[in-house]
Length: 207
Image (cartoon, rainbow, N blue to C red; front, side, top):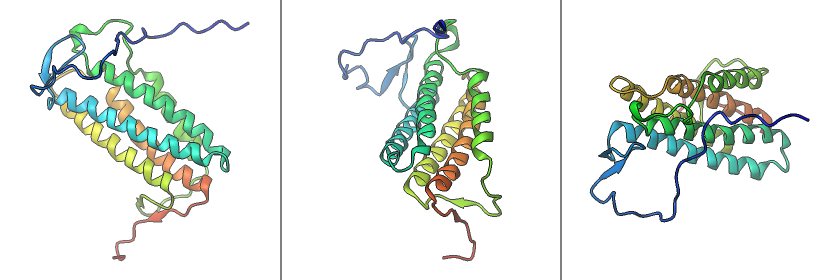
């Protein structure tokens, strides 16, 4: 009998028993170590954008769930997107913590997550047609939703690069976000193929 894998990270250390605390009414919020910072600080902006990305991924997952009865091949992508939502929270865990407060088994991104995204891109990108123009979001709703995710991911990456010039952001956070935005592009094309939707290519003479 296969033994269960030892968890890599500690479980969450939080207890949410009331949503509002009134502590943020002054425009500040607390990092994981208890430090108070403005809600508009670059660190908060960065992991807040990851939270936004996770929400849009949830929308895409619900679209997949609605399409699955007639398009069972989409199930794999739904599983991947759920995993990515968890990984974004792992990234947020480190971003919400100053380096001196990070503990050894705290949730974070590793090289393994970056490598897995690359493998999934390579596998799911096989058979997609050669592009000779940029792709416009659309053709089907799921394609457009994944492009929204891609652009929010790029914004998260920009926030993270700006923050990384001054503060630690986690060793693999930037590489992961860079790879994830590429993966979302591949997945947007992959779902169009799965659903039989035509890709919408940029034509500079349209309009």
